[in-house]
Image (cartoon, rainbow, N blue to C red; front, side, top):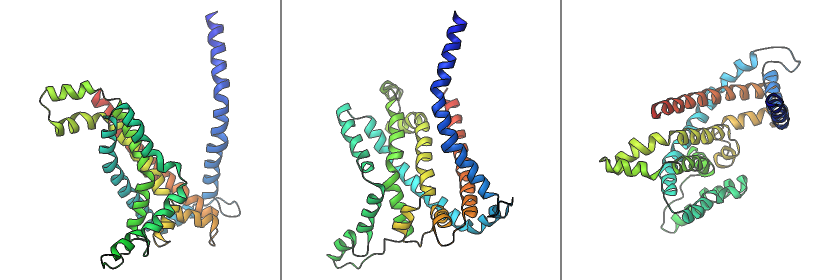
Length: 279
């Protein structure tokens, strides 16, 4: 009786999981296999590693992409951490309102949000028009690395706030009260209690911001004006641009995936190490 029940339950679980497995095979494994195939073959289908070697001529673009994505991620963390902490400590009704304000920009189309910053940062945009009222000359803000970083921070900041907020909500207020009772002031409580307990949210937020930031191409194209070429722009050029070369584009994508996997592995190691310490 028990064995039959276990068998039926196991069969039911497999049937429920089947659509997800098919989805993963069709939309994840197959595309990844195709990327790997094109990256390691010529246009005639002959095996080669030349595409991988050719990627290194774009090392400066990889460095720029990683650098700008890292800066944007750090800025997001600095802004999001206190915001998430304050959000987690407010009343339930206030949290609902504040969460809606955090997610409100995400309800608008990504392109429209980025295009709005073009209007704000342009030579004749809102900021320079305001400065002109005081006789200040126009400042070049658009088509710069700063504009690209600003676009990344604005678009991806909610992805840092939400994981941090979720983790901080789980920190029992009695733990903070106990820290105060044991002589910790506000700063010590933050650094010795709150931050160690919020490490999983930090690692999740860093991953959720850094990964899309390093591979973005819309932000760099619209706010960088094409002068701040990033990896995403380079990949797009190989598939849709005049220099059509899907084999090289696949090789660049493959190298980018390896870089992202390495970074995520390192972040997970930090997360696992902190979990062991807390246990």
